[in-house]
Length: 495
Image 1 (cartoon, one colour):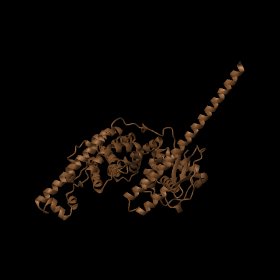
Image 2: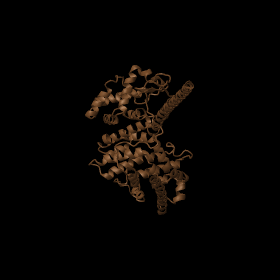
Image 3: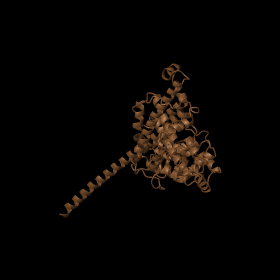
Image 4: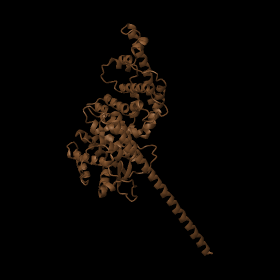
Protein backbone atom coordinates (compact mmCIF):
# COMPACT_ATOMS: atom_id res chain seq x y z
CA UNK A 1 0.00 0.00 0.00
CA UNK A 2 2.87 2.38 0.81
CA UNK A 3 4.78 1.58 -2.40
CA UNK A 4 2.05 2.83 -4.82
CA UNK A 5 1.81 6.06 -2.76
CA UNK A 6 5.55 6.62 -3.15
CA UNK A 7 5.29 6.05 -6.91
CA UNK A 8 2.41 8.53 -7.09
CA UNK A 9 4.36 11.12 -5.09
CA UNK A 10 7.44 10.64 -7.28
CA UNK A 11 5.26 11.08 -10.39
CA UNK A 12 3.73 14.30 -9.05
CA UNK A 13 7.14 15.67 -8.04
CA UNK A 14 8.51 14.90 -11.49
CA UNK A 15 5.54 16.66 -13.15
CA UNK A 16 5.99 19.65 -10.84
CA UNK A 17 9.70 19.83 -11.64
CA UNK A 18 8.97 19.78 -15.38
CA UNK A 19 6.37 22.54 -14.90
CA UNK A 20 8.77 24.75 -12.89
CA UNK A 21 11.54 24.20 -15.46
CA UNK A 22 9.15 25.11 -18.28
CA UNK A 23 8.05 28.30 -16.49
CA UNK A 24 11.66 29.30 -15.82
CA UNK A 25 12.50 28.85 -19.49
CA UNK A 26 9.46 30.90 -20.48
CA UNK A 27 10.42 33.71 -18.08
CA UNK A 28 13.98 33.63 -19.38
CA UNK A 29 12.77 33.90 -22.99
CA UNK A 30 10.48 36.80 -22.05
CA UNK A 31 13.34 38.54 -20.24
CA UNK A 32 15.56 38.12 -23.29
CA UNK A 33 12.83 39.58 -25.51
CA UNK A 34 12.44 42.54 -23.14
CA UNK A 35 16.20 43.16 -23.17
CA UNK A 36 16.36 42.95 -26.97
CA UNK A 37 13.40 45.33 -27.28
CA UNK A 38 15.02 47.74 -24.81
CA UNK A 39 18.26 47.56 -26.81
CA UNK A 40 16.37 48.44 -30.00
CA UNK A 41 14.71 51.31 -28.14
CA UNK A 42 18.06 52.70 -26.91
CA UNK A 43 19.53 52.54 -30.41
CA UNK A 44 16.49 54.07 -32.09
CA UNK A 45 16.46 56.86 -29.49
CA UNK A 46 20.17 57.55 -30.06
CA UNK A 47 19.72 57.82 -33.83
CA UNK A 48 16.52 59.90 -33.52
CA UNK A 49 18.13 62.42 -31.18
CA UNK A 50 21.20 62.73 -33.43
CA UNK A 51 18.85 63.35 -36.36
CA UNK A 52 17.07 66.04 -34.33
CA UNK A 53 20.39 67.70 -33.44
CA UNK A 54 21.36 67.54 -37.11
CA UNK A 55 18.06 69.19 -38.11
CA UNK A 56 18.48 71.95 -35.51
CA UNK A 57 22.01 72.46 -36.77
CA UNK A 58 20.66 73.03 -40.29
CA UNK A 59 17.83 75.34 -39.19
CA UNK A 60 19.60 77.38 -36.54
CA UNK A 61 23.20 77.50 -37.81
CA UNK A 62 22.81 77.19 -41.56
CA UNK A 63 25.93 79.32 -42.12
CA UNK A 64 28.07 76.62 -40.49
CA UNK A 65 26.18 73.59 -41.79
CA UNK A 66 25.22 73.48 -45.46
CA UNK A 67 22.11 71.53 -46.57
CA UNK A 68 24.33 69.09 -48.47
CA UNK A 69 26.45 68.41 -45.39
CA UNK A 70 23.39 67.91 -43.17
CA UNK A 71 21.79 65.58 -45.74
CA UNK A 72 24.97 63.50 -45.84
CA UNK A 73 25.01 63.51 -42.06
CA UNK A 74 21.40 62.27 -41.98
CA UNK A 75 22.22 59.50 -44.48
CA UNK A 76 25.09 58.24 -42.35
CA UNK A 77 22.82 58.23 -39.30
CA UNK A 78 20.23 56.14 -41.17
CA UNK A 79 22.93 53.57 -41.97
CA UNK A 80 24.27 53.42 -38.42
CA UNK A 81 25.62 50.08 -37.22
CA UNK A 82 26.40 49.26 -33.58
CA UNK A 83 29.43 47.22 -32.53
CA UNK A 84 30.97 46.15 -29.24
CA UNK A 85 33.39 48.69 -27.88
CA UNK A 86 36.07 46.07 -27.22
CA UNK A 87 36.45 45.54 -30.99
CA UNK A 88 37.83 49.08 -31.23
CA UNK A 89 39.15 49.70 -27.71
CA UNK A 90 40.43 46.22 -26.92
CA UNK A 91 41.24 45.55 -23.26
CA UNK A 92 40.82 49.29 -22.51
CA UNK A 93 37.06 48.93 -22.97
CA UNK A 94 36.57 48.04 -19.31
CA UNK A 95 38.61 51.08 -18.22
CA UNK A 96 36.46 53.42 -20.32
CA UNK A 97 33.32 51.67 -19.08
CA UNK A 98 34.31 52.26 -15.46
CA UNK A 99 35.19 55.89 -16.20
CA UNK A 100 31.82 56.58 -17.87
CA UNK A 101 29.88 54.69 -15.22
CA UNK A 102 31.38 56.67 -12.34
CA UNK A 103 31.04 59.96 -14.19
CA UNK A 104 27.38 59.19 -14.88
CA UNK A 105 26.72 58.55 -11.19
CA UNK A 106 28.22 61.91 -10.14
CA UNK A 107 25.85 64.65 -11.42
CA UNK A 108 27.65 67.34 -9.42
CA UNK A 109 30.95 66.54 -11.12
CA UNK A 110 29.31 66.48 -14.56
CA UNK A 111 27.79 69.93 -13.99
CA UNK A 112 31.04 71.30 -12.59
CA UNK A 113 32.98 70.04 -15.64
CA UNK A 114 30.52 71.58 -18.11
CA UNK A 115 30.65 74.99 -16.40
CA UNK A 116 34.46 74.85 -16.20
CA UNK A 117 34.65 73.94 -19.90
CA UNK A 118 32.50 76.93 -20.82
CA UNK A 119 34.66 79.28 -18.78
CA UNK A 120 37.76 77.89 -20.47
CA UNK A 121 36.08 78.32 -23.89
CA UNK A 122 36.92 74.71 -24.72
CA UNK A 123 36.22 73.89 -28.37
CA UNK A 124 34.39 70.65 -27.59
CA UNK A 125 32.04 72.03 -24.90
CA UNK A 126 28.83 72.06 -26.95
CA UNK A 127 29.54 68.63 -28.44
CA UNK A 128 30.27 67.25 -24.96
CA UNK A 129 26.95 68.66 -23.67
CA UNK A 130 25.16 66.70 -26.41
CA UNK A 131 27.20 63.59 -25.58
CA UNK A 132 26.30 63.90 -21.90
CA UNK A 133 22.60 63.82 -22.76
CA UNK A 134 22.52 61.32 -25.64
CA UNK A 135 25.20 58.89 -24.42
CA UNK A 136 26.03 59.30 -20.75
CA UNK A 137 22.36 59.62 -19.76
CA UNK A 138 20.91 57.65 -22.68
CA UNK A 139 18.40 60.32 -23.79
CA UNK A 140 16.76 59.95 -20.36
CA UNK A 141 14.68 56.98 -21.42
CA UNK A 142 15.21 55.28 -18.06
CA UNK A 143 13.92 56.77 -14.80
CA UNK A 144 17.39 56.52 -13.24
CA UNK A 145 18.95 58.56 -16.06
CA UNK A 146 16.21 61.17 -15.78
CA UNK A 147 16.91 61.58 -12.07
CA UNK A 148 20.64 61.96 -12.71
CA UNK A 149 20.06 64.59 -15.42
CA UNK A 150 17.65 66.57 -13.24
CA UNK A 151 20.37 66.72 -10.60
CA UNK A 152 22.86 67.88 -13.25
CA UNK A 153 20.43 70.70 -14.14
CA UNK A 154 20.04 71.62 -10.47
CA UNK A 155 23.81 71.87 -10.02
CA UNK A 156 24.07 73.92 -13.23
CA UNK A 157 21.62 76.40 -11.70
CA UNK A 158 23.92 76.67 -8.69
CA UNK A 159 27.29 76.72 -10.49
CA UNK A 160 26.36 78.58 -13.69
CA UNK A 161 23.27 80.76 -13.23
CA UNK A 162 23.75 81.65 -9.58
CA UNK A 163 27.35 82.79 -10.18
CA UNK A 164 26.52 84.73 -13.35
CA UNK A 165 26.45 88.54 -13.29
CA UNK A 166 23.34 88.48 -15.49
CA UNK A 167 21.67 85.04 -15.36
CA UNK A 168 18.61 86.27 -17.24
CA UNK A 169 20.66 87.32 -20.25
CA UNK A 170 22.61 84.05 -20.05
CA UNK A 171 19.35 82.07 -20.23
CA UNK A 172 17.94 84.12 -23.10
CA UNK A 173 21.03 83.49 -25.24
CA UNK A 174 20.23 79.78 -25.10
CA UNK A 175 23.89 78.76 -25.51
CA UNK A 176 24.84 77.96 -21.91
CA UNK A 177 25.03 74.37 -20.67
CA UNK A 178 21.82 74.70 -18.63
CA UNK A 179 19.78 76.02 -21.59
CA UNK A 180 21.07 73.36 -24.00
CA UNK A 181 20.49 70.46 -21.60
CA UNK A 182 17.07 71.79 -20.60
CA UNK A 183 16.04 72.01 -24.27
CA UNK A 184 17.34 68.50 -25.04
CA UNK A 185 15.53 67.14 -21.99
CA UNK A 186 12.16 68.76 -22.70
CA UNK A 187 12.23 67.73 -26.38
CA UNK A 188 12.35 64.04 -25.49
CA UNK A 189 10.26 63.99 -22.32
CA UNK A 190 7.09 61.97 -22.90
CA UNK A 191 5.06 63.77 -20.22
CA UNK A 192 6.12 67.09 -21.79
CA UNK A 193 4.73 65.97 -25.15
CA UNK A 194 1.44 65.04 -23.50
CA UNK A 195 1.22 68.44 -21.82
CA UNK A 196 2.09 70.36 -25.00
CA UNK A 197 -0.41 68.38 -27.07
CA UNK A 198 -3.19 68.80 -24.51
CA UNK A 199 -2.44 72.52 -24.16
CA UNK A 200 -1.64 73.67 -27.69
CA UNK A 201 -3.57 71.46 -30.11
CA UNK A 202 -6.92 73.25 -29.86
CA UNK A 203 -5.66 76.88 -29.94
CA UNK A 204 -3.27 76.11 -32.82
CA UNK A 205 -6.07 74.48 -34.80
CA UNK A 206 -8.22 77.55 -34.12
CA UNK A 207 -5.43 79.79 -35.45
CA UNK A 208 -5.04 77.61 -38.57
CA UNK A 209 -8.74 78.03 -39.35
CA UNK A 210 -8.37 81.82 -39.13
CA UNK A 211 -5.11 82.19 -41.08
CA UNK A 212 -6.37 84.34 -43.95
CA UNK A 213 -4.24 87.42 -43.13
CA UNK A 214 -0.88 88.18 -41.60
CA UNK A 215 -1.55 89.57 -38.12
CA UNK A 216 1.08 92.28 -38.49
CA UNK A 217 1.13 95.00 -35.82
CA UNK A 218 3.94 97.14 -37.25
CA UNK A 219 2.37 99.79 -39.58
CA UNK A 220 5.46 100.01 -41.81
CA UNK A 221 5.68 96.23 -42.25
CA UNK A 222 1.93 95.98 -42.73
CA UNK A 223 2.08 98.39 -45.67
CA UNK A 224 5.06 96.56 -47.22
CA UNK A 225 2.93 93.44 -47.63
CA UNK A 226 0.79 95.17 -50.28
CA UNK A 227 1.59 96.47 -53.75
CA UNK A 228 1.11 100.23 -54.36
CA UNK A 229 -2.17 99.48 -56.15
CA UNK A 230 -3.42 97.37 -53.22
CA UNK A 231 -2.34 100.06 -50.76
CA UNK A 232 -4.36 102.69 -52.60
CA UNK A 233 -7.39 100.41 -52.86
CA UNK A 234 -7.29 99.43 -49.17
CA UNK A 235 -6.10 102.64 -47.51
CA UNK A 236 -6.62 105.45 -50.01
CA UNK A 237 -4.09 107.96 -51.25
CA UNK A 238 -0.72 107.71 -49.50
CA UNK A 239 0.15 110.56 -47.13
CA UNK A 240 -3.44 111.63 -46.46
CA UNK A 241 -5.18 111.54 -43.06
CA UNK A 242 -7.57 108.90 -44.38
CA UNK A 243 -4.60 106.71 -45.35
CA UNK A 244 -3.03 106.96 -41.87
CA UNK A 245 -6.40 106.38 -40.18
CA UNK A 246 -7.12 103.22 -42.18
CA UNK A 247 -3.61 101.85 -41.64
CA UNK A 248 -3.99 102.43 -37.89
CA UNK A 249 -7.41 100.77 -37.96
CA UNK A 250 -5.92 97.70 -39.69
CA UNK A 251 -3.13 97.53 -37.10
CA UNK A 252 -5.63 97.79 -34.24
CA UNK A 253 -7.80 95.06 -35.80
CA UNK A 254 -4.76 92.76 -36.02
CA UNK A 255 -3.82 93.58 -32.43
CA UNK A 256 -7.33 92.71 -31.28
CA UNK A 257 -7.18 89.36 -33.10
CA UNK A 258 -3.74 88.62 -31.61
CA UNK A 259 -4.90 89.53 -28.10
CA UNK A 260 -7.84 87.15 -28.45
CA UNK A 261 -5.55 84.36 -29.73
CA UNK A 262 -2.95 84.87 -27.01
CA UNK A 263 -5.63 84.91 -24.32
CA UNK A 264 -6.91 81.62 -25.74
CA UNK A 265 -3.41 80.10 -25.48
CA UNK A 266 -2.99 81.39 -21.91
CA UNK A 267 -6.40 79.99 -20.98
CA UNK A 268 -5.38 76.53 -22.21
CA UNK A 269 -2.07 76.82 -20.34
CA UNK A 270 -3.89 77.41 -17.07
CA UNK A 271 -6.51 74.78 -17.86
CA UNK A 272 -3.93 72.02 -18.41
CA UNK A 273 -1.49 72.70 -15.58
CA UNK A 274 -2.78 69.51 -13.93
CA UNK A 275 -0.75 67.51 -16.47
CA UNK A 276 2.35 69.74 -16.36
CA UNK A 277 5.40 67.41 -16.14
CA UNK A 278 6.48 66.83 -12.55
CA UNK A 279 10.17 66.74 -13.50
CA UNK A 280 9.96 70.19 -15.13
CA UNK A 281 7.98 71.50 -12.19
CA UNK A 282 10.79 70.26 -9.92
CA UNK A 283 13.66 71.87 -11.85
CA UNK A 284 11.83 75.21 -12.21
CA UNK A 285 11.07 75.16 -8.47
CA UNK A 286 14.73 74.40 -7.72
CA UNK A 287 15.79 77.27 -9.98
CA UNK A 288 13.38 79.66 -8.26
CA UNK A 289 14.44 78.58 -4.75
CA UNK A 290 18.17 78.78 -5.52
CA UNK A 291 18.15 82.13 -7.31
CA UNK A 292 15.72 83.74 -4.84
CA UNK A 293 18.45 83.38 -2.18
CA UNK A 294 20.87 85.51 -4.24
CA UNK A 295 20.96 88.97 -2.64
CA UNK A 296 21.57 90.91 -5.85
CA UNK A 297 18.48 89.40 -7.54
CA UNK A 298 14.98 90.68 -6.87
CA UNK A 299 12.28 88.05 -6.36
CA UNK A 300 10.34 89.55 -9.27
CA UNK A 301 13.35 89.16 -11.53
CA UNK A 302 13.73 85.52 -10.50
CA UNK A 303 10.06 84.88 -11.27
CA UNK A 304 10.53 86.50 -14.67
CA UNK A 305 13.51 84.24 -15.37
CA UNK A 306 11.49 81.13 -14.50
CA UNK A 307 8.61 82.25 -16.72
CA UNK A 308 11.01 83.15 -19.50
CA UNK A 309 12.64 79.71 -19.24
CA UNK A 310 9.30 77.93 -19.57
CA UNK A 311 8.14 80.06 -22.48
CA UNK A 312 11.38 80.57 -24.43
CA UNK A 313 12.83 77.07 -24.03
CA UNK A 314 9.72 74.93 -23.74
CA UNK A 315 6.33 76.32 -24.78
CA UNK A 316 7.06 78.92 -27.51
CA UNK A 317 9.25 76.62 -29.67
CA UNK A 318 6.33 74.16 -29.71
CA UNK A 319 3.93 76.93 -30.72
CA UNK A 320 6.11 78.06 -33.62
CA UNK A 321 6.94 74.53 -34.85
CA UNK A 322 4.07 72.29 -33.66
CA UNK A 323 4.85 69.58 -36.28
CA UNK A 324 8.27 68.87 -34.74
CA UNK A 325 6.61 68.21 -31.38
CA UNK A 326 3.84 66.02 -32.76
CA UNK A 327 1.14 68.54 -31.75
CA UNK A 328 -0.20 68.94 -35.28
CA UNK A 329 0.12 66.07 -37.73
CA UNK A 330 -3.03 66.26 -39.83
CA UNK A 331 -3.06 69.91 -40.92
CA UNK A 332 -0.57 71.78 -43.14
CA UNK A 333 0.89 75.05 -41.83
CA UNK A 334 1.29 77.66 -44.56
CA UNK A 335 3.44 80.80 -44.47
CA UNK A 336 0.64 83.00 -43.10
CA UNK A 337 -0.16 80.59 -40.26
CA UNK A 338 3.54 80.24 -39.41
CA UNK A 339 3.90 84.01 -39.20
CA UNK A 340 0.86 84.28 -36.92
CA UNK A 341 2.17 81.49 -34.69
CA UNK A 342 5.44 83.40 -34.39
CA UNK A 343 3.50 86.53 -33.44
CA UNK A 344 1.70 84.61 -30.69
CA UNK A 345 5.00 83.20 -29.41
CA UNK A 346 6.64 86.64 -29.39
CA UNK A 347 3.73 88.17 -27.50
CA UNK A 348 3.89 85.45 -24.86
CA UNK A 349 7.63 86.05 -24.44
CA UNK A 350 7.02 89.80 -24.18
CA UNK A 351 4.44 89.16 -21.47
CA UNK A 352 7.10 87.24 -19.56
CA UNK A 353 9.39 90.29 -19.86
CA UNK A 354 6.65 92.87 -19.26
CA UNK A 355 8.43 94.19 -16.17
CA UNK A 356 11.54 95.06 -18.17
CA UNK A 357 12.28 98.69 -18.93
CA UNK A 358 11.28 99.06 -22.55
CA UNK A 359 10.71 102.38 -24.26
CA UNK A 360 8.86 100.91 -27.27
CA UNK A 361 5.40 102.54 -27.09
CA UNK A 362 3.94 100.06 -29.60
CA UNK A 363 4.93 97.10 -27.42
CA UNK A 364 3.55 98.82 -24.32
CA UNK A 365 0.31 99.47 -26.19
CA UNK A 366 -0.01 95.78 -27.12
CA UNK A 367 0.83 94.50 -23.64
CA UNK A 368 -1.55 96.95 -21.97
CA UNK A 369 -4.44 94.95 -23.45
CA UNK A 370 -3.52 91.90 -21.33
CA UNK A 371 -4.05 91.13 -17.69
CA UNK A 372 -0.58 91.66 -16.17
CA UNK A 373 -1.03 88.62 -13.92
CA UNK A 374 -2.11 86.20 -16.69
CA UNK A 375 1.31 84.58 -17.12
CA UNK A 376 2.25 85.04 -13.45
CA UNK A 377 -0.75 82.92 -12.45
CA UNK A 378 0.55 80.08 -14.62
CA UNK A 379 3.99 80.31 -12.97
CA UNK A 380 2.42 80.30 -9.48
CA UNK A 381 0.80 76.96 -10.24
CA UNK A 382 4.07 75.51 -11.59
CA UNK A 383 6.34 76.54 -8.71
CA UNK A 384 3.70 76.26 -6.01
CA UNK A 385 4.05 73.71 -3.24
CA UNK A 386 6.95 72.67 -1.06
CA UNK A 387 10.33 72.34 -2.78
CA UNK A 388 11.96 68.93 -2.24
CA UNK A 389 15.59 67.99 -2.74
CA UNK A 390 14.98 64.67 -4.47
CA UNK A 391 13.86 64.63 -8.13
CA UNK A 392 10.32 63.24 -8.55
CA UNK A 393 9.74 59.70 -9.75
CA UNK A 394 7.58 59.31 -12.83
CA UNK A 395 4.01 58.32 -12.00
CA UNK A 396 3.83 56.23 -15.18
CA UNK A 397 7.16 54.45 -15.62
CA UNK A 398 6.57 51.83 -18.31
CA UNK A 399 10.18 50.59 -18.00
CA UNK A 400 10.09 50.01 -14.25
CA UNK A 401 12.45 47.22 -13.22
CA UNK A 402 14.82 47.71 -16.17
CA UNK A 403 18.33 49.09 -15.70
CA UNK A 404 20.36 50.49 -18.58
CA UNK A 405 23.71 48.73 -18.81
CA UNK A 406 25.03 50.15 -22.08
CA UNK A 407 26.21 53.51 -23.41
CA UNK A 408 26.29 54.43 -27.12
CA UNK A 409 28.73 56.91 -28.62
CA UNK A 410 31.06 57.26 -31.57
CA UNK A 411 34.80 56.84 -31.13
CA UNK A 412 35.28 60.55 -31.88
CA UNK A 413 32.73 61.49 -29.21
CA UNK A 414 34.63 59.36 -26.73
CA UNK A 415 37.94 61.01 -27.65
CA UNK A 416 36.36 64.47 -27.47
CA UNK A 417 34.91 63.70 -24.03
CA UNK A 418 38.25 62.42 -22.76
CA UNK A 419 40.09 65.47 -24.16
CA UNK A 420 37.48 67.75 -22.58
CA UNK A 421 37.83 66.13 -19.14
CA UNK A 422 41.64 66.29 -19.27
CA UNK A 423 41.55 69.97 -20.30
CA UNK A 424 39.12 70.83 -17.51
CA UNK A 425 41.29 68.94 -15.00
CA UNK A 426 44.36 70.86 -16.14
CA UNK A 427 42.50 74.20 -15.94
CA UNK A 428 41.86 76.36 -12.90
CA UNK A 429 38.06 76.63 -12.99
CA UNK A 430 37.14 73.65 -10.79
CA UNK A 431 36.48 73.72 -7.09
CA UNK A 432 39.13 71.89 -5.10
CA UNK A 433 36.93 68.91 -4.19
CA UNK A 434 35.73 68.56 -7.79
CA UNK A 435 39.29 68.81 -9.09
CA UNK A 436 40.44 65.97 -6.81
CA UNK A 437 37.44 63.81 -7.77
CA UNK A 438 38.07 64.37 -11.49
CA UNK A 439 41.79 63.65 -11.18
CA UNK A 440 40.99 60.35 -9.47
CA UNK A 441 38.40 59.52 -12.13
CA UNK A 442 40.64 60.20 -15.14
CA UNK A 443 43.83 58.73 -13.61
CA UNK A 444 43.37 55.22 -15.03
CA UNK A 445 42.06 56.29 -18.44
CA UNK A 446 44.74 55.85 -21.12
CA UNK A 447 45.98 58.99 -22.87
CA UNK A 448 44.53 59.15 -26.41
CA UNK A 449 45.31 61.37 -29.33
CA UNK A 450 43.15 64.48 -29.18
CA UNK A 451 40.34 64.77 -31.69
CA UNK A 452 40.06 67.90 -33.80
CA UNK A 453 36.30 68.00 -33.96
CA UNK A 454 33.41 67.65 -31.57
CA UNK A 455 31.16 66.33 -34.32
CA UNK A 456 30.25 62.74 -35.01
CA UNK A 457 32.78 62.54 -37.87
CA UNK A 458 30.26 60.67 -40.00
CA UNK A 459 32.55 59.86 -42.91
CA UNK A 460 33.34 56.20 -43.56
CA UNK A 461 37.05 56.95 -43.85
CA UNK A 462 37.13 58.31 -40.32
CA UNK A 463 35.44 55.37 -38.62
CA UNK A 464 36.35 51.69 -38.71
CA UNK A 465 34.14 49.39 -40.78
CA UNK A 466 32.86 47.12 -38.04
CA UNK A 467 29.95 44.74 -38.22
CA UNK A 468 27.15 44.92 -35.66
CA UNK A 469 27.15 42.60 -32.72
CA UNK A 470 25.25 42.10 -29.51
CA UNK A 471 26.50 42.72 -26.02
CA UNK A 472 27.74 39.52 -24.36
CA UNK A 473 25.32 38.43 -21.68
CA UNK A 474 28.09 37.73 -19.17
CA UNK A 475 29.34 41.37 -19.08
CA UNK A 476 27.50 42.26 -15.90
CA UNK A 477 30.25 44.34 -14.33
CA UNK A 478 30.76 46.82 -17.12
CA UNK A 479 28.71 49.14 -19.23
CA UNK A 480 29.31 48.33 -22.93
CA UNK A 481 30.20 51.07 -25.40
CA UNK A 482 28.66 50.80 -28.86
CA UNK A 483 30.07 52.36 -32.13
CA UNK A 484 28.31 52.18 -35.67
CA UNK A 485 29.91 51.07 -39.12
CA UNK A 486 29.28 53.50 -41.94
CA UNK A 487 28.73 55.42 -38.75
CA UNK A 488 30.17 53.03 -36.18
CA UNK A 489 28.76 53.49 -32.69
CA UNK A 490 30.74 51.97 -29.84
CA UNK A 491 28.84 50.56 -26.92
CA UNK A 492 30.04 49.09 -23.65
CA UNK A 493 28.94 48.20 -20.14
CA UNK A 494 28.89 50.58 -17.17
CA UNK A 495 30.39 49.45 -13.90
